[in-house]
Image (cartoon, rainbow, N blue to C red):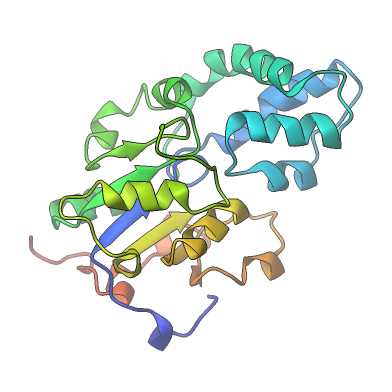
Length: 234
């Protein structure tokens, strides 16, 4: 944990990232980019992956292409990666604890939404097997939403997402769930508390900005943030 329980403040609304947090898609991103890197004798390293997690697709591709000195423009890398991802994204599974937590909050009438850096077209691919699950959310804000001017680590995605609840909560009334450093930075910049569920390979020294760090969504205790505990009658 990154803080003591006394430092947690009650919230009324919950915002979720998607990739690597609700859906096991980060592994699929690695598969697609490594397949392209293999063509040029390059390795898609954890360090590069960690730097782009949570970013919009084109921004991520620019960093990858530059960092690994690939002979591709960011646009070309994005196009090549999407050809691969079209075939593998529909296989994405839910992360452990995601269905239990989201279903619980929905049944308890806690307003919940998704703020993802994924573009609309890739969101549809990734969620194709989980339509009923994603219907539990009030709304979804994607990375290509016209109101999201800047991607994570800027706060736009979470601020826009919060503004679409009716009535809209104040930022301090929102709790963000994230797996990526860029996403945590975005949540903090938005003035929200952030629960981080990082990849097991991530250096825990880098997670200090999160309000709470967990191994899995299965370990989350809603009552820490004034939300109904599991087992509460709705």
